[in-house]
Image (cartoon, rainbow, N blue to C red):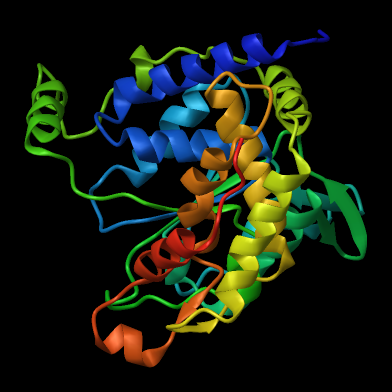
Length: 323
């Protein structure tokens, strides 16, 4: 089936996905919204939070709202790269080599607790995240489209975690923080999960698939055509360049950060139902786009600051275009 979506239709479908996920992940509106921004922009998401806040539930709810393929990889210290991408085995019975595809051959990939595996294993995702293909025994194999990786990680202070390589971090369009729910949200969550239910898992059977993978690709095309004025594009570049000489930062974001700001800004505008990017769209996505692309200086870390503090200060100093 072929689709031809208008911007208003794409925006409405995005809101339907958002509503469907919200049935499972009570509260966390900002987290759901930022995940949708990455989906519309054709990017990948790194979700960080302590255990038990619903990181895996978010990804499963997103997969349920899309009638596509879903796969999950539980990262552990002994996980091998071939366990992710797949491998070739010799079939003794038929006297031939057979390709055993790994879990990356899917539409929505959950890389659960990605920082519990060493860098060699983490890097197995680099090619598929960038090129939408996997090379096995010298032969390239494309993965189904659309393809999106949602990786979860626990804070690095926890025992048994490995920091992600900078090259790997740069492949994620957004880094999303998931925090503790409010009192009202936690009360509602407990009421839902304990209502005549065995165990503590949310029943995802109530969620409906509201879009197909083909519709998602059309929504991504509509997002890519949202207009960006030259002044807004220059504003995004100024923000990124300010991080390179920013006080309190050990290093700033590269050009991929500027590109990511525009991509995410387009998706934010579409969620707002607009066919053009406003400077406020860039402001709204700056933190999730750049927080994993910059590094704090040791002095700022010792004083208890984080990257969001520094980025907010840079945003306040960077003049936005008047629209």
